[in-house]
Amino acid sequence: MLAYAKGDATAFDQLYARHKQPLFVFFLRQNLPRSIAEELCHDTWLKLIKNRHGYQTNALFTTFLFTIARRIAIDYTQKKSVNLEKQETDNAAQSILSPAQQNNDKDNQTLAMALKEQIAALPFEQREVFLLKQEAGFSLEDIAKITFQNKEKVKSCWRYALQKMRKGLRFYDQ
Amino acid sequence: MTNKQNKQLLEDQAFIDSVYKSLADDNALYTDDELPSELLDKRILSAAHKAVETSPILEEDQLSNKRKSWFFPMATAASVLLMLTVVQQQINLTYFSDGTQTTEMTPSMPELAMSDSIEANNQELEAQFMAGQIKEKQYAAAQAKKEVAASIQSKPSLARTKQSKSFNITTDDTSSDLLKINEKTPVIELTVEQYLLLKKDAEVTPLYWRLIAIQENSYLIQFQSSELKNVTYRLNKSRFKIDNTNRVETRLFSEIQQ
Image (cartoon, rainbow over all chains, first blue to last red; front, side, top):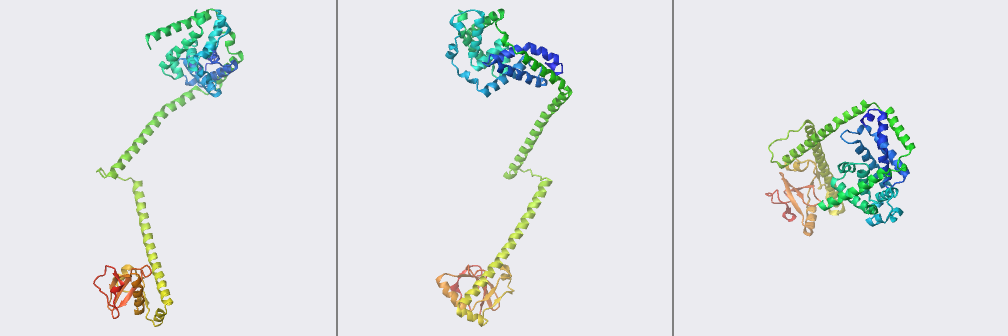
């Protein structure tokens, strides 16, 4: 990132190749349509390009990137009032039963589908923490920095998210 | 968090990890449709390259950062200084108003200039006020004069007196007491007819008067009535008798004897 900030355009190509999928998946897993996820992804990268001189070496590049991404995702959800799934109850989450679950099929394809469905069913805060921890590979400390929250709260969200995910994927556990 | 909760957390985490591992081993974690489109890739990469090509020289950005680096401490220092000055001034003002502080305030040049101008303004206002008072007195005297003349004309006996030249209005008087009131206060010679009329009126509504001055052949008095106020009457000593010892107190009309 520092090389890109100094004017090395090829450095950005490497950065993009390395981080484009986790970032795209981060948006996709927020219950957003593909076109919207692409749009938000585009906005995130453009914002990063614009603020390239503001990047400081004391923070990880991924932290910098996902902080921007999260802000953009929140702005979008607030604008479109898509944040309603926060109120969904555990029961509602469990009611999303895929045909795969109903058949108790342990096939990996169906497991992948069930996993995505369970992630989508998580409340916003828990889903955010889950995606950053499990899919983007951040530590709880980093997530606390990205989300500007208390570490204990992040840990709590993480714990609840895991509980719900396990409950939802219990057919795989058996 | 309790041990039980911790244990549960670790178990849940291990379970989710195993799910992810299983999917990753089978390359089923991410499908092809979970990659951004090539069009998006191109757009982002071209924007990145364009930004670097057209971006302003880096030194300029660094220079702006340097500017920022001194701007905030400078602004903070200025704010603190301003705050301290205001607090200091407030403290000084408080001590000054209490009068408990022995330290004198040394006014600055603008403060001195301001106090001078305020003093000059006050003097001017005072002069205007005095001039206004004098004019007011003059106007009241003129009004009283008119009223007396009108009352005389309305009563036939007094009208006759006017014809017989017994009704004199003099404006020149050498009495120092009278000068104290007003140099232009009119002096009216009180005739016997006037005296009788006033005596009648005084029986109905009490009329008070005050001795102003004693002259060789006459007394100068003033009535304490709204109608006759600011008009000095001359009482001829040969016609009227009054107790001339008290010049301060107001007295009843009945104390004027014929």
